[in-house]
Image (cartoon, rainbow, N blue to C red; front, top):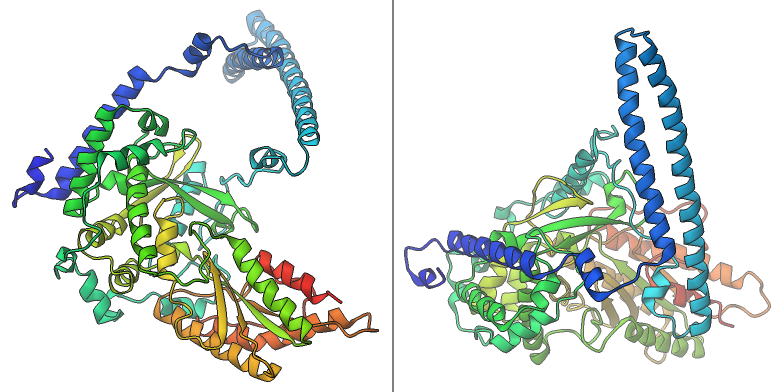
Length: 585
């Protein structure tokens, strides 16, 4: 079937969809025969179950059995009541119902007491483990067990136009998926978002209003993808084998239900087959539809639990596609890093760089400014729905023109971004399929790199201002020269605000008016107890102009309250460090 792809009259998309279906059925049937069940693996390995867990399982099974008996008798008693049955048998059944009800609630209470005791013992063992290992050697996996989970129930997600409670959990999932389908498009963000609705009406631009050069390059009929590129070489079996084995065993499967551990432990026959399929997809620029589908779940951030904007969407794609994305990600990253594409101030999703690099740069500038008794304005930037609002055509344009990603690699990326679908999942419940015509899906291997490419030229037209980036968060401050006055620094920051506003308008992104704020760092006046408070109040008033210019260019209005906030702006971890420096004597 792969050989048929080279024929001129072959519909490659249909053929690749059929190949993906065959792979899925073959992998699932092989995994069912080769991968043992959990109970079989436990018996084969001789794993001993703890007595507490065994007793808890027995109590839970007993409670379920008594619950079924109670419901069965309750149905018969209700049937007698509806038929006005007053016989002795009906009276005996009512007595049995009371006894069954008491037994069921007693078993339920015993299970809850034992479960609470088991949980308390586990918590005590975890605390002892943390104390023995020491605060510096505690692993993140152990630490995450001590904090509450970020997941929240999503059974009450309402629609944008009404606050009615959904009829079922599936309707709630459909509401969530419909919201994010609108977010991941060129349409206006629904009214759940904190942005201004007046601008949202203007934000959804049609395809005909975009730049002609973007349309020319992204048009499938222009043939620009056929140009030669150093990225066009086929993948070797060793590369595919390394990518497949890098899949984490605990990762949830995608819509195709292919387990990642099965792929990572597979033989060379499977990797050779995947190598042929991957190279055919890379050569023809076609991606099967099921590889572009994703199961999505939401993580609660903050706010109203009925507001879908209070959640973060995470996509889980096929394990076969994740391995393919690793191959493309490594090759694309090597190409971009080799040509020096990324700005040195971009620390997000790059090897050997982290937020510590940005923090170190900021602290060095702050210490230098305070030692010279200068005031330093620092602007913190945040993009609204950054990953979800990236237009595919503009991203492909930047890859082609700025990143020099052409040929088969560019054609494959265009197929990778086109016609993506997702569905919301919660346990065994699933919503309907919804389309995502914009954005890079959070959870995909390629998404962080593609987003870093998209925002890489944010500081292209800025002069006298240094901008550090990490993902969708940015921090900017003026380059302080000897003898430069504070008025000059503020003028540069205003010009920088206008520049990034024009950039956001051109590339269809919007800065958050609530998270994009300025902090002015200065030494407190000696002998004044309210000096730090005064500095923060003054910085809040002075930041209004820059914040307003950044937000207004994106179509939002920023209002200043009568009593300025004295707390640290909730922008990023850099803001808290900056405020600490403000109070430094």
